[in-house]
Image (cartoon, rainbow, N blue to C red; front, side, top):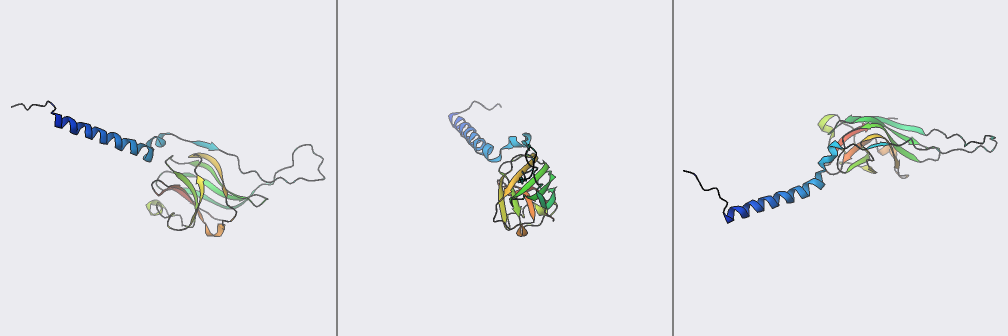
Length: 185
């Protein structure tokens, strides 16, 4: 016995409702999860922060005065958390007192709502370290400029660096660390 597979008006209505629900889910999910970022790299190669130049009144050279090298006051190396992450970080201070977080040779996955945070959390290896960075204090230095390359982030003047001993590439959308570095003197 063969059943009649011709769509009845009730079946058509259900099919249209299922199709509409599917389209609505996709319309919400795409902007939320941004899956295309897994295949799109953003490379940023900024030079190190410019040091303040000290003009020598007795100099006879026609060229610009040499720049003083910013002092490195802390450094660290990224470890992987949710995504493979490599590179190094340095906290540098210019002769004018300005401070920057310098990320060098970063290589991580791209993702939605990635942030650079200074945190008070210890850097833990493996899954134990994925979720610890929003449990305590942190300073949001801004959106990650690119998932590859070298980049600079100004540290606000009022931040006491003694209270912040790690850096994380934090995915605010999913509340997870892509990678982190423990800062040492």
